[in-house]
Length: 186
Image (cartoon, rainbow, N blue to C red; front, side):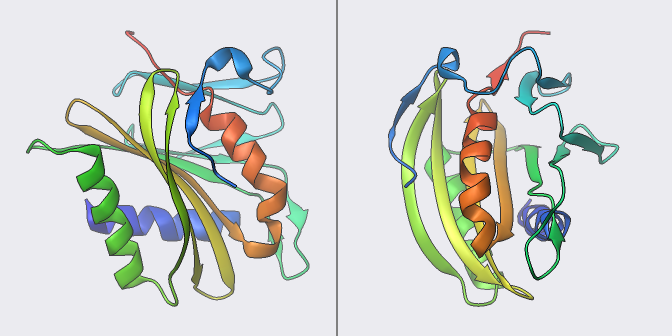
C-alpha cells in the first residue's frame, strides 16, 4: 500500500509537472453542474465531478484515476494540475487517523526536503476527511494537497501536486472537485 501510495504521489507529480476545518454540503458546489464531467467508479461505488475542460486519464484499474486539466505554462515547464484518486482495500481494520499518519510519514521519509504546511479535519457530503498540505523538493519545489478518507475497509486518497508557484491557481479547483465526491449504491 505504501509503495503504491508513493508511486501515485510521484506519478501525479510528473503528470501535473488556508485549508480550513468545517463541513461542506454538495449544494455549495461552484462547478457548473451542466458543464461538469462525471467519473463513476463501479468497484468502489463512488462518483466525482470535474470541469468539462479536464480529461480522465485511465490507469486500466478501478483503484486509481487521474483527472488532468488544461495545460498552462508555469515558466519552468508546462503543467496541467492533475489530480488523482486512489482507493485501496485493506485486510485489517484501521482508523482514518492511522491511514493519514502512516501515509504522511511515508511521504516524509521518502521525499526530499519534506515540509508540512498544515493539516485539518473536514466533512464533505457526510464523509469525514483529514487534509494535508505539504511541500517537497523532487526536481523542483512542489506543493501537494491531499484529502484522506475511508469507507469500511477501503482507504481513499484524493490529491494534486503542482509546482509551488502554481498552487494558487489550483487549490480552489481541487477543493471544488473534492466537494462533489459521493459514495453511490450502484
